[in-house]
Length: 402
Ligand code: AMP
Ligand code: MG
Image (cartoon, rainbow, N blue to C red):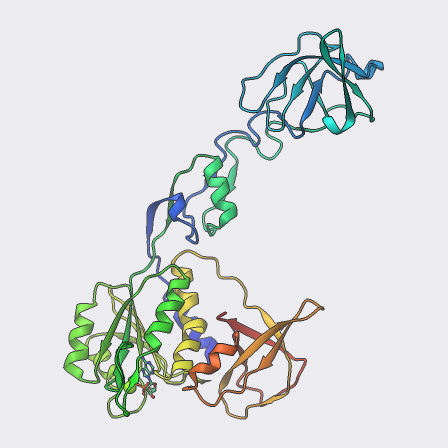
């Protein structure tokens, strides 16, 4: 049964499974999805903190009464327990990050002071107007102790890493990564290190798929099998404990395209085979009950690549706990005609415009075997099946791979 793209996508997303959680050191968790809330262990900031280097004074008892010259009693550096002002007419020098000393409530920065000496004692004269409470970051101003700082489902980026560190959350519960096997099929394929005979090619799909997976933090195992039914069956049997199979090739109508039959014989529940799209029409999708989910992508390099970003990546991200962000749109930069009843995934180059939009410049590629075409493209623009003529200036979704 031939499905349209959005039905196929919905069918794929309908099978999203949770890959579970694991505990990781926060330093190893960048890019992962947090699966527990992170709470403030103390108020933010944990004490009244000086935000400038200068002097701390008691505003009401001194400057508030017109006093502008202050003798220095002591110094309050950062990392030193809280000191106390002895005489309200004096000051304590205070450093950025230090606790505001007891009985002081205002910090005057050095930039607004003139230093002098009087009878062997250091003193400061205030040269600029002072506001009560200035230059203090008050305890709890950014959040009370116990406040939820990061909610489950957040991706751990450098900003989250800093917050995890500051609250002492050195071990975190994160979404587990799925085990993924990438499987190339084809008698014509040889290893990357081999010199192909004239009728052979080096296998490339599995490496671009593995690189795409690496971008999600997943290290896949890579396999190659010839177009020989028992060999394919044997390999599949050995991979039954893996979460996901991403196969490349052998799903079309060719004599040696064995995957649909073998997978069905092995008990895979076929969700769909063939999607109304170009490239990638022969895409086969199914799953084993209590076993792997199978994305069997066409062998043509551009087809498999497109299917990965349109279907496989969102499915993986959802299973890892990511919130799926809305698909961005871009403005088509040139008229395009495609008069087949298929969704057309057009490789495009994305150019940022001063208007804040992305302009999508269509890429002239030859066919779905034109692998180097992807080198100068950034995304696939999804042009709907119901339309034949696409005008420059119209907006369509783009599936970015760069
Ligand atoms: P298939 O889907 O098996 O009919 O393959 C379609 C085309 O993609 C053929 O020209 C294959 O040689 C090519 N192809 C299949 N698998 C790979 C691969 N792993 N790397 C590069 N090209 C491939
Ligand atoms: Mg093949």
